Image (cartoon, rainbow, N blue to C red; front, side):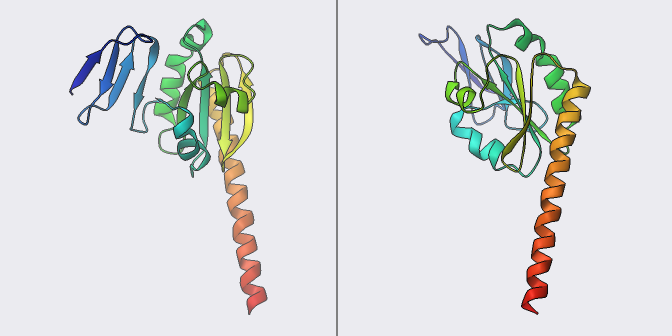
Length: 165
């Protein structure tokens, strides 16, 4: 794994990922980012549409802030959750200080806030600390909403085939 260190005015120490590295870390962000599905990944405005809204899987987004103790305490819980649900759901972080437009768009008034997405729509939200089991229930709600949506679409498709015949 190759890492490049640099100092910037905004971040005292930042490690950039390279082509052979799958993780990036900086001193103000306690969360790792990864391009794999097993660990939560911090996403920004530019990635949100592709990673969350266009996903064909249920998605839990943890809106957090580095200065918030509750957000930092939830890190290990969300990390475990990502590993637990990696086969059927995605888990992402959004830093409200870096992606304030997303926080405004999804009406995040406090951190940590957890928003669950299904078929590109926010279907549930919880503010404050949660257990892994509570987050799994939220994701299962999204999974059920997606399966109902797919069932309705297939029923419509069958109706069109019958009308055409």
